[in-house]
Image (cartoon, rainbow, N blue to C red; front, top):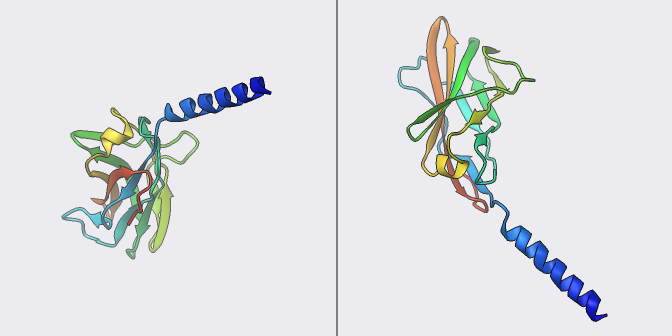
Length: 159
């Protein structure tokens, strides 16, 4: 009986030690409404970055990214970048997904495949606001639309 209690106590201690060694999570969320870059002819193209909760030590970032084309003509997305601190990361879409360029017809939204290999972990990358920038072409002109993202505690309520 004492032996069983000892095994139970040791097992519980082992589980608690393993849990404290886990990499805690964080929240990465969009901070402001999506915007078009200055000089953009059409302010109706918007970028939305869905909130995710990665482990703080991860060195990759792959959120759900939705581009909404509220204009009356199709746009062609040519690339997606993440600007964080003094680094600019070019998205590397997963192999199984469509690659750029991607056409988004007028008045439609599309989820874009994005993947960023980060130089630092997500906690360091998103300790200050970062910018998700989507470049697109409309009527033979190039434009960009952005969303701003930031990291916070795992249990935070997102806007």
